[in-house]
Image (tube, rainbow, N blue to C red; front, side, top):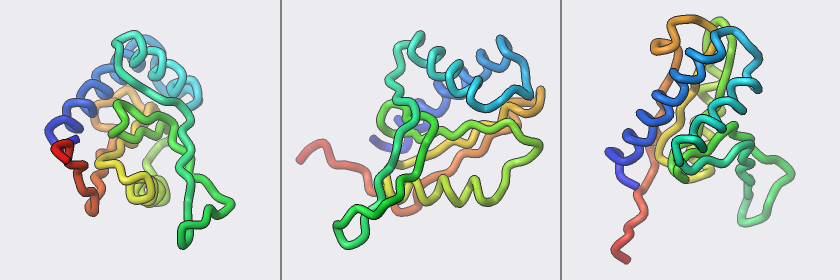
Length: 136
């Protein structure tokens, strides 16, 4: 999937997230928003997987750790949901790790803590993402 397509998916997720915020308000537990956003995306006929686990391998051997992502949208966008006063650098680091390990192009950190939702998200791109060539 190219950058334009992934940005389109991110825009769809942001629109769905805004609807969730309008319906539920702000400051609730992140799990509530995760389930609401999942159902909103399904209602909009957008492919989404909830509670996705990214396996970690060392020299082709699985190690006993998985990174957890709240939602994977259209098999291209990782989404983690928060409801906290500010994003923490560790949240961003975890998303960057998840992007590299999953080989996905982009992630969104969505924070439902304040009324000003449109300014409460962070888009993170995978700097080493190599698009899959569909022509092969």
